[in-house]
Length: 137
Image (cartoon, rainbow, N blue to C red):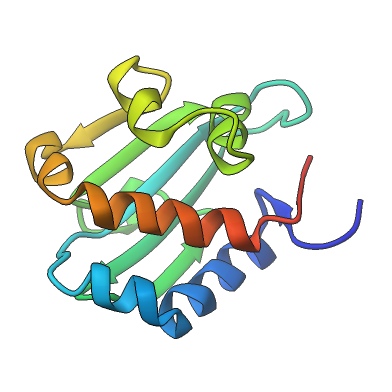
């Protein structure tokens, strides 16, 4: 494997940088207020659970933490839980992120109404994540 592999600390750091330097995302997400935790369940080649935290605020990413746990963080506005396979399918463009949420392949713990009111931000966040993903396990 070469490139930035999902999931990894390098992938998360690359996404952090991308979100802060992507003018399109900065504009679309200018009203977004909410941190999130990815809770990735083992599946396929991923044998251990992985968590990744992103502090998103008004079009910027104020910080990230790989291996974050809820007991070490303030309660994030959103916890996104899915199997490694389903997270990878979203990142590889094999499934639409909104479809993944509506079919419970990607479970959202948090204010789903807020997320639905900010669909352009959600979709542009996924665009950024897809652009930095060069490999999966």
